[in-house]
Every structure is written in structure tokens, then in C-alpha cells.
Image: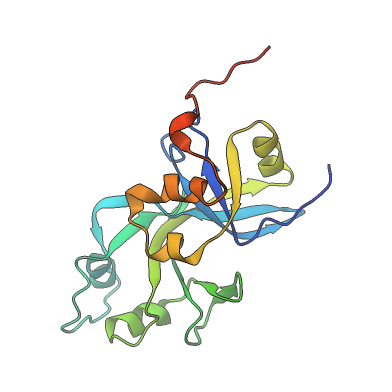
Length: 187
């Protein structure tokens, strides 16, 4: 199987994918190489978990910052206790991965401390957990028609309401999800 690097792309779940974590999911691929892939679901907010609560649990003083309205997303089923921040390129943090010229993934606590002081990036997502694929697993799922693949768009990632990201990501490549059937057939 030939390899195509899909880092900085969206995986858009096809309607027939009903698994609870991935149903109508949009995954931002942060890393992809011949050993596997790693991404984050960017449209499934956790109910009743907001950034201020996470910071309190980590003993980060949030002062007067209003972080109670910032949702935390379920990034995926792998290591759901591990936190990540996807953000626009801005600032220097201890543990960051450059995903694209625009987008960075940071997993160190120093970015949370900066956000608590209103000194962090302007646009960001807070996520717990990630989605991962072993060697050729993602490629097989794409061949099996589980995912649409689209170049990532920053405005979908940071500015589009969560409930619209699935359809907007698909529309970015000319696909109307309302025209696709939930069931797949085999001849």
C-alpha cells in the first residue's frame, strides 16, 4: 500500500459509522507517518466539563479569568485522562508539536497556566484523549469508506460551532452529508 501523509487533514466520519466516539466525528490529524496516525476529535464537547474545572483540578489559579464557558472536548478514546491544547501558532511551550504553519498541539501544563493569566493563544481547543491508528489501520478504514478526507481549515477548527463542523468539513470538499445514506451495501 502506498503512503500519503494526511497530517493537517480532517477525517470526516461517514454516516454509517455508529461507534459512540466516532459517530459524526471530525478528527484533526496531528501526526501521520508509516507507523500510524494520531488525531483529535474536534466536534464532541464533553457535557458539564469546562476549562475552569480542569484547571481547578490541576491546582492552577485562574484568578478572575472567565473560563467556565470554554468547553473541553473528548479528543478520543485513547488516554482520556491526558490533556491537549490545539491552538494557533503563538507562544513557546514546553511540549509542543508543530502540525502545520498555523496550528500547534501542546500537551504541557505551562500553556494552561498562560491561559489562566490571559496570556495564552487567542484561538484554541482544549481536549482530553486522542484517537490513534496503528500501521496501515487508518488507510484500511479510508479504503473501507469509513472516512472522508479533507484538507484542514482553520476556521472550521476554531470558529465553526461544534454541531456544524461535521457538515462544514464535508462541504469544504463539496460533499453534502444529507445526500449520503446511513447504510452501506455490498454487491
